[in-house]
Structure formats: structure tokens, C-alpha cells
Length: 366
Image (tube, rainbow, N blue to C red; front, side):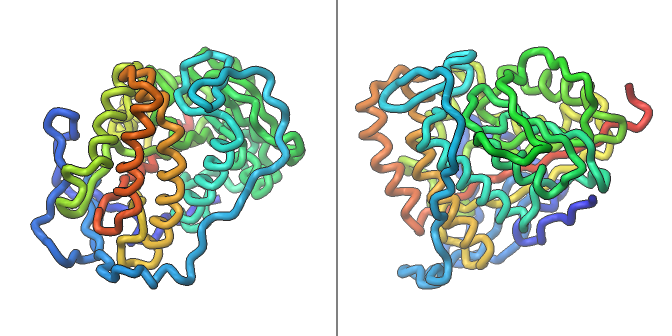
């Protein structure tokens, strides 16, 4: 079934200009030179020109609503560790820095609905076959993407893998979950029509090796699709510069790099896939505003949900600061107070660029 692409206001057509990647040493938020108004336009290599809603009371969000609880009955967690009031996976302990407790599961389910909204009610963009037979979701988390796919495509046998067994007990009969580390050698006997990974930015020491394994286990003509975030954040003006939110970006980039799982790899996905042997590799960029500052109704709605995601996600990233930068839990708490204020400040016109990269295994490839 071929998926239509997101509409132009949420997707990005890359132009010929290429800008150097930001680093903690020389990175500054993108400056447009406009101080008051911004024309709705395209993102070029991660740079956005989005109209700002200057209405201070944000009355335009009156018809929007925050996400409701999506917690479902889940299977018991077999083993775990606790650290600074959060629960983490025991299997391959330390290889994934985000928690797996109920609080995080709720955030992940909400985040899935955010992506579904941003993609205009689609789960993926790859033009896969009409009746897929085997589908793999790596880093499945709560399993909500895999369950939705299995429900929508009853022809498919869907496998979701994760380090944590936090998926629901009752799932569609064509969906199953396994505790696996995608960086280990894959031993599947079947070939997949689609392999999907979302927000794997913090997961892998060697992302290219994971993409290579995916290529080997795709059926000829099958697709790999990665949906991931480009860090650090950007802004349409100078309002991100000098904020605690910008400092958080820099600390996260530094801490993740020290942990050996940098958050800056997403721009490499497309060239890596082409080097591995994928063909027809496409990349689409989406804008996720940090709150409701855009004037565009769709981006404003995405921003409302992403604001909620970020505010909760800050707490989930504390392990990067405590493990990677050796901060105390108390230091993290004090620091995050001002970061939350910036996320709630509609005068900070910041956004995250999300990359959707997909490519096809050649029909004659083995």
C-alpha cells in the first residue's frame, strides 16, 4: 500500500544549500534576520521559516486538547533496576538511557499519537507492497506502533523487539513481541517487507551496523524506514540563544557522546543507507515546534503535543546528565526548572527537525 506524503506545511523539500552540523563548541541557533514576522515556508536542511503567532494569550489553541491517558494493561516486567526514582531495564543494563516505568510508558504512547498526527494519520511513508507479509519494529517500546500496524494490515505478521518486556499482554493474533538487542546479530529466518525504527537516536553505538543488518534481513524489494530527531534544536530567530533550553541541548549532546551513543547521527542515515546498498532512498523532514508558537494550525497542534512530550521527556533524560556528565540528581532537578520555563515560553521560537528516511532493498539483492 503506497502511503501519501505529509502535506507541504509539515514536510520539507531540501534545497541545494547545505549548512554545517552544529557542535557544542560552535553551534548557535539559526538566525533568519527577521525579528517580528516569519513567512510560512519550507525547511532547507533543517532550517525553518514558520509564521509566528504573536497572540500572547494563545487563544487559538482553544479547540485543541492535550493527550488523554493511553495506559493499557501490560505484562509484568521481569527484571529492572531503580535509579534516582526511575525504573530502567536490567537486560543489557545501561545500554539504553531512558527509563521503562509506567510514567515513561505513558509518554511513549502519547508520543506515538503525536507522530501519527504529524504524519497525517499514517504509520509510515515507505511505498511498501499492498499486503505485507512480515514486518519488524525495532525498539518497539510499548509496542503501540506494532499493534496499530498489525491491526491495519491483517496480512502481516508483525514482530516488535525491545530491551524491556513492557508491551501489553493482549495483542492482535498477528503481532508478537520479543526481548532483543538490535545491536546483537539478527537470527531471523524470515525476510521482512518493512523494518521500522522510530526515535532510535539514543540507542545505538554503531547505527550503521544496525542499518546493515536490516538490509540483510529485508526481502528483495522490502523497505527500511527510520524516523528520528535531529539534535540539537533549531530556531527561526535568535530566541533560543542563551536559554536554559539551549544549554540543555548542549549538555545532552555532550553527555550522549561521552556515553558512546551520540544524538547527532540522524543526518548520516541517508548516506549510510546508500552506502549499504539501499536504492530509492528518500528523506522527508518534519517540524516539531516546542510549543504553540507557530501560526499554522497544524504546526500549532503538533507543538501542543510536543510541548507535553518534552516536559515529561526532560525527566526521562536525567540519566544522560547523571551518568554522562556525573551530575547529582539534585543538580539535574535545579537545572531543569528553567528548561521547563523555556519550553512553556511561546516567545522561544524553537523546533526539532524530525527526519523520515526510507530506502528499498534492490529486487535482485540477496
